[in-house]
Amino acid sequence: MDAEVIVVGGGVIGLTTAVELAERGRRVAVWTREPPGGTTSSVAGALWWPYRIEPEAKVGGWAVESLRVFEELAADPGATGVRLVPGVHAGARLSRLGRWAAEVRELRAATAAECPGGGLWARLPLVDMPVYLAWLEDRLRAAGGTVLRRTLDSLDEALAEAPTVVNCSGIGARWLVPDESVRPVRGQVVLVENPGVDTWYADADSAGAATTYFFPQPGRLLLGGTAEEDVYRPEPDERTAAEIVARCARVRPELADARILGHRVGLRPARPAVRLEREVRPDGRALVHHYGHGGAGVTVSWGCAREATRLVVEAV
Image 1: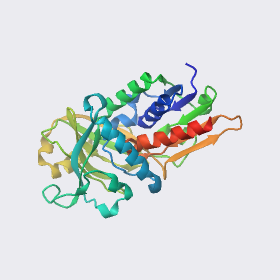
Image 2: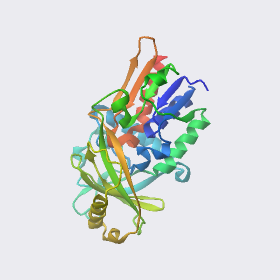
Image 3: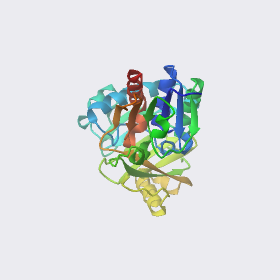
Image 4: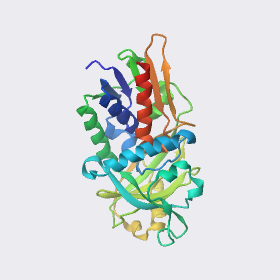
């Protein structure tokens, strides 16, 4: 296939953007160093919530647009991996959230029984990322798109083969653009057997390096986590894992003895603000930059993908 558009990056941002473009009739190829199941996206806890992402003025719209899509996908969780699950954000207050919060159905103050220290209760999309990424890839192929394993040294390599390139390279944008404002935020999680937890819990300090959350996924419970800025280490740390389990067990004591199934590490591609803009080269070829989503790539994925698609369409 001679691609009209090459999307660089096979994580959730790249695949969602490729799906939008292919379903708009574009011939699309995704170039990715790792298969989608091997990207940072596959490690994500993937609870819908605008977390560690800017600019605030745009994030709300992207997030709500994505929320509506996930609500529809939750009608078939076995295929999509998307479920609507209740839970609480400890310490959160409606008054501290953006205008997007008014668009979240059922979002309310938690009762004392639901969250003793106060917080917010909501039924939100929770995404089983390995299932979801495979579903996105299948949807892309059904629309005529392809996914190719390619490692790039420069975005010019893609521009040499297609008139339009969408740069969804995540942390790779630090070197491919290059953009030194892209920084890793290391996230480590622990997978355990679920002792019967059917609600999610999150207590995340947006400025801290340690967070506490647990998300029930099919066949496992995901415990987190960390948000270590400028740390590239991809290997799980044993001491960090023990601290994660201990923090979660302070909320649900039965988690202290849950059998560990595995450990995962991902590097969130943080940036002071998402870069979503078109660059037109002197020869008329278009490069749409679409990266820097930090810890909320899943949350804003559909809204951002649709904006990126508009930039591609307008460039033609």
